[in-house]
Image (cartoon, rainbow, N blue to C red; front, side):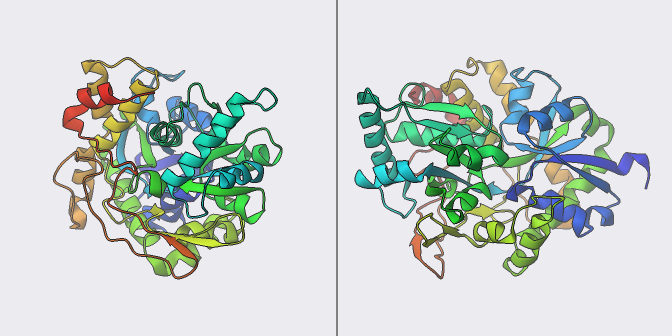
Length: 408
């Protein structure tokens, strides 16, 4: 193949790297004339920096990370765009067994309900902070500019917990989360799969709630692309987007879950037992007590326009950067955040496939309704409309008032 079609993509060994992995392994990329090489990394900081210095042309990245880069919040500021998302959902909040016992004493239930679990956690936090003998609870997220960080803080705040004063939040790379929990270094974490399932199956933690319950159909990972490379190699990028779309459709087919888990379990990719990967793909999660809970739409790789780079997603992440003091709100910062996500490139690339594409570039987050299928085993978490568990709405056309209404 010509050099223009040789693309190196960085990724972290997580379930939601699936679309890139399948594009490579099942030759969707090759069919589009792309020689796709995948480079496994150990942290989001490494992914960010290697994309910035040109080791990678594209990468599996945290959805807010390219926005942070373009806003000048990262060490190496290199223009980065998001022409495609890599799925919706996929995260959960896991706590230590000791913390879960305390939460159950305060009314928590093993049903992943974020409101009930959050009230219980608030009561435990209050007791901890009133005590002179117990340390403040410490939680981990994977990166300061991550959906994990923002959704975790959003959940805490909606439940009356000040994430800046009532608890401590630290940064831990995903592969180290389970060890940090087991050692007692942290009391809980918000991370992608398979690290929640791993803790539950190993008896090291209990899944308290899931991203699909905090914000159903919410963005997670995206394809980060060097803006300069994209401008100079638009045909290659378009071909890659088509390959990834076909791979996402394959990943979203329930008949392929077993094969997908097997592929991801290979040492080259996630490198963890197939049994750690299947629960999230099937939406049947172990809770840590020996039971399994069904969660609709836990991880969505293709349905619900899961690969579309909504500008409303970008602007919600920006609103949280402002909320948590990472950047000052300004018209110029809004422009930068909005222009980071590129639905125009997505549409242009995928138009030849003849699939239905969203007409709008943004939507009111939390305003859509959805059917709620339930699982076949265990108790089922019955979710309401797509959107935020506390009934909140995010209208990108009312960004200023939304930011003003947000409380720490």
